[in-house]
Image 1 (cartoon, rainbow, N blue to C red):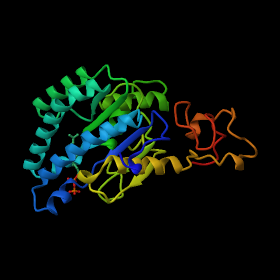
Image 2 (cartoon, rainbow, N blue to C red; image 1 turned 90 degrees about the horizontal axis):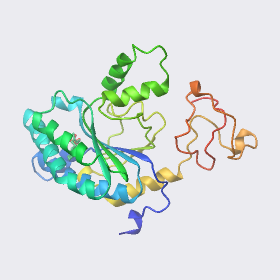
Image 3 (tube, rainbow, N blue to C red; image 1 turned 60 degrees about the vertical axis):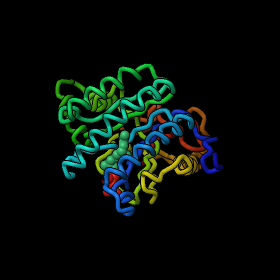
Image 4 (cartoon, rainbow, N blue to C red; image 1 turned 30 degrees about the vertical axis):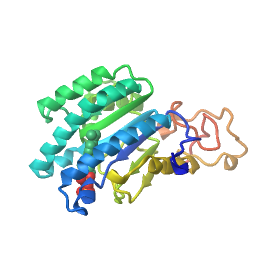
Amino acid sequence: MTQSASFSGVRPGLHIAIIMDGNGRWAETRGWPRIAGHRAGAGTVRRIVEAARRAGIGTLTLYAFSSDNWRRPPGEVRALMRLFEQHLARETPRCVANGVRLSVIGRRDRLPDRLCVAIAAAEAATAGGRDMHLRVAVDYSAREALVRAADSCRSLEVVDAEAFEWRLNAVSHDEGRAPSVDLLIRSGGEKRLSDFLLWECAYAELYFTDRMWPDFRAADLARALGEFERRERRFGAVRAEAAGGWSGGPGPPAPAENGAPEAHEPRVAGGGAADPAPRRA
Ligand code: FPP
């Protein structure tokens, strides 16, 4: 492993989300059909899942197919659906062997039946995985999930962020609270969120690289994680020193209605588990 692929110093349990962009351009520059880029991209998925697990990442969410991707040529869509199905079948034993729990988030009602069967089988087989949660987003739209989650809250007397996050995950076929993203990576040179995890990325650090997804390697992941570790996350608060002497010990309770970090969220760099009272997001 090269030096740049070293993962030492990364805090365990982070949630990393990746927009895997650039498959089509990677293929086109070689004079190949776009699906060749997607196939090469599937190889990158395998390598990065393994690298993320070795790095101690807690949750890895990969954007494989957005709800807007249905607008692509039918042949490309069909080929992608087949590729997802094959990949799930091929990678499930590897996930089981490596303690990776696999979930597919997004809508299911528009997916081919064969893919739904493959998803159910992969999720059941990997349900006991404890080392990393791999979430693959297929027919996923954050805005649509937000609307559906809001709609599902109508029966509640009180809607707070926690109740909402349970429903946001449930409408995407995942369990528990929607996990906040620590680091969002996008390959392929574009710098946008493309309707991915809009709620969960509220305080995500963003990392963009020109590397096309089929060329993305463990060293690129290590580079992104290294930059993430150097960033100071304040969650809308101020640096510990500027907060008037608060130095990372138990601070004043943060009022939840101001979007303050919750207990499960990562610590502010250089600080402690509790955050000083937020000033402004
Ligand atoms: C975006 O690149 C990529 C996709 C829409 C598909 C992502 C699929 C994979 C990485 C393949 C395998 C995935 C799994 C989970 C097995 P693009 O086609 O928009 O690239 P472009 O911007 O260069 O055209």
